[in-house]
Image (cartoon, rainbow, N blue to C red; front, side, top):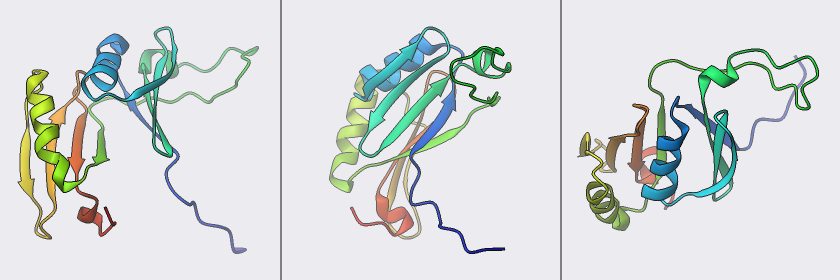
Length: 142
């Protein structure tokens, strides 16, 4: 097999939620992410530093695109809860916990990994697992 370049980083990641209004309120209002786009009941996208978070309604993305679709994105979707981890500085984790609790978001777990990194876990309105973790969890700086 010929040598090929390796992917540099994750550009976008997707979660699935049937209720886009609830997802938009959670990621936009509670977490404060910048909304980049919304297309009816199909999707809502959020911009982060160097990456995009895509929230799709699986009922709208699982069917194949119409033959005359402007953008022939292949069908995709997932069932059941997914997982996403946001990088959070150690000094910010207590503030994140307070912000989430003030918004009525239940803390599912708050613990330290064997390497000492801390993670806080919550659920978004669709049941996806959302983690706030120190980057050193994976030996990244920050």
